[in-house]
Image 1 (cartoon, rainbow, N blue to C red):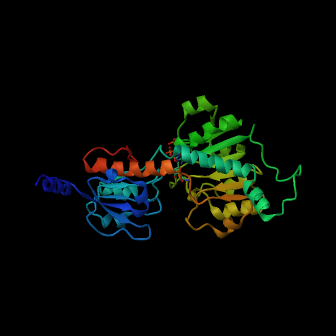
Image 2 (image 1 turned 135 degrees about the horizontal axis):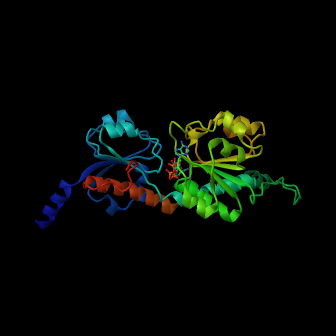
Image 3 (image 1 turned 90 degrees about the horizontal axis):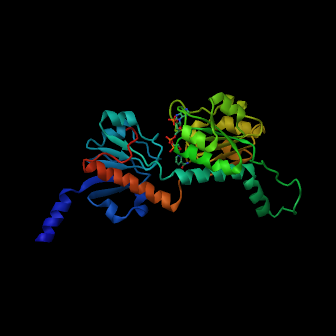
Length: 324
Ligand code: NAP
């Protein structure tokens, strides 16, 4: 009797939610308590229905049409820090809360950014290819010479959580740091000696330009042909932010013409497609969007996304709303 009462009570507060099926292995049963989960695979459209929450991957567009199909929706808990896959204006109009997963992925993404910086500077892909090909014929004083980092300038476009974490890691490498952001970062400047500059100076002075701003109408396509022509000859471009910050064909041309030293990319404008000219361009390190891909971080991201759902459904404020 007692059990059945408990069961009825449990069922009474069982909220219907949609969660990306790909997150199943990262979540524990207790995190899903009170949730009646429908697991939604990435290749399936969002169904029409009474779901009160959705936890999508960053690859799923959640726009006005999708929101219209979910009239009872109270929260979109995006499993990423970027939320350019969600129409936040449409959500706001429907009084749907949007949350993301900041902070927990900062270190993993900053580490991967450094993986790309070092791989570009020291020509890692060419070196691995040479060894694998069997054509390496021994030590040579001029074999695969790269770029010495000490004394060079690292330019950060965007100096929020990840941009600053990348900058802080640059200090022991002996790099000078400049950054462009909408607001000054006095603590970051004090700790690292970083200097805030405008976009024009950032392009002109960076030996390595690393992108850490979100995809917005202001930043989309900001690294276009003109911007690339303003970079120093031989500069390295790294992008672990969002692919559409860069015009990929213009980047491919800059690499083909030898104007750019190298490009290290984790993200692309039309994932998983990569502009064919960019895929074929020389001196690239191309990764499949793995900035936050560590066991610890991916578990934490899934946990925060679901914790946001639990909070909102309990009538509490979300933990990490995209707008405060
Ligand atoms: P964040 O803390 O919000 O930092 C974003 C930075 O961009 C801020 O410094 C912001 O300036 C700056 N910014 C925004 N608009 C700008 C503009 N128009 N001009 C100049 N600066 C601008 O975000 P985060 O946590 O560091 O993440 C950054 C981005 O990385 C995310 O949006 C996401 O897309 C991407 N990301 C990718 C991966 C991956 O797997 N590759 C993983 C995590 C994140 P203010 O500080 O002045 O506002």
